[in-house]
Length: 512
Ligand code: HXC
Image (cartoon, rainbow, N blue to C red; front, side, top):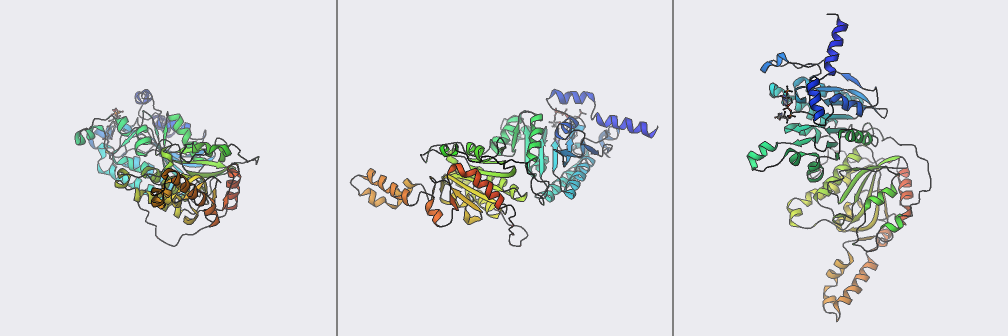
């Protein structure tokens, strides 16, 4: 056959994946094909494919009679907002997107190129797992990918969209990447599926309930983003990348920004007078960040802690904040894990951190203690202490006890620490403190309630304010709330060229 004609035919076949019927079935499930996804994800006409004609090599179980050019994964590079990315997109219409030796090799090639060229790696996952006909060769292929995920960790951003099944050991590649995005009702992740669960633990559970997007967004925290459909998921990937640098040696991109009036008077009214009244820290974030720039990460998981990217004056920052409207913003196991992982990502990729503090302390109780609030709280403390990116703290109200230290205090290396005039920086709340240290005096008073009130007022005056901390230099400046954005902007400018080197080590030993 004429080679040009042969190329045309092979290309045509490759572009069709598993054929029209399977594409139709994919659409029926509300899913896009591997190539449709790439065309939504990447800039128009930017995709350059590799390995379109690769086929599997197995001959067992009649596999020699069936092969598809591309072998169930579309791989290559392209651009997003003009910036280079490497991508693989599994094609469920070819052997259920299952991973064969050659399928794995194609993914590994893309991973190697991404790492060597310092550009983000994006995986669009939609796969029935190991290619059953290939046995251990397929398992080896997975391990080759896992190994590369770890090599690339902290060097280039790695993002995983789960757009169909992702089960068994296959979950561990996405789990080792920086961010996971899932789609409600059409994607799921679990180590063992509902059938095995039924046999082993006798629990009746659907795939969606066991490992669907909502479950992982709210219960396990495995996914960072829970999207309504594939287009939303791919769009989220695009915007997420806009906050990130290409690799750990670069700074994140800055958007042009025209300075205007940066006073934010709304902030003066935002913090309630009563120490126990809730308010929404996301409203504070909206005032401090550039308009509409906040992209929340892990929105539905451990909502007492807020994490996300934003821009200030066009510059990308990471925000870690207590949320007083959920569990009073207390630090618990999940909130600490969430804050720690996000902090480490920002630190690895030169994204300055803004920490907003309103925290009553750590959550008490057997559940927290027995499940390791000590080890998990230490993760956040460790991650922040270790971070060498510019770090700015704003205490909006409470900063009590150990949580004061943990939430980016000056003592653990924060660069700039601000506090609002009404904030309370103390070992504990005034009432609790007065009840302990003046117990005898209160009990023996004629009117114990009045005495308690007096003692609370005395403690508040002395300790439950930011001035004691400011007098020690632990707070650089007590600022009016409307000044926050100005101070953060100036601080980021001042810290632009910050360089801190950690003591030489192989790696630290974060309490995992
Ligand atoms: C080969 C597979 C396959 C697999 C699906 N197919 N999974 N081929 N290896 N792992 C093929 C089917 O034969 C079928 O081919 C096509 O893909 C679509 O599959 P359906 O079953 O028709 O689709 P659906 O009903 O949507 O169900 C999807 C599914 C199911 C839930 C993923 O296919 C399934 O359970 N597959 C097996 C999953 C599994 O056990 N994988 C191994 C897990 S162990 P035709 O020709 O009919 O279109 C593992 C270990 C990884 O992955 C370890 C890493 C360390």
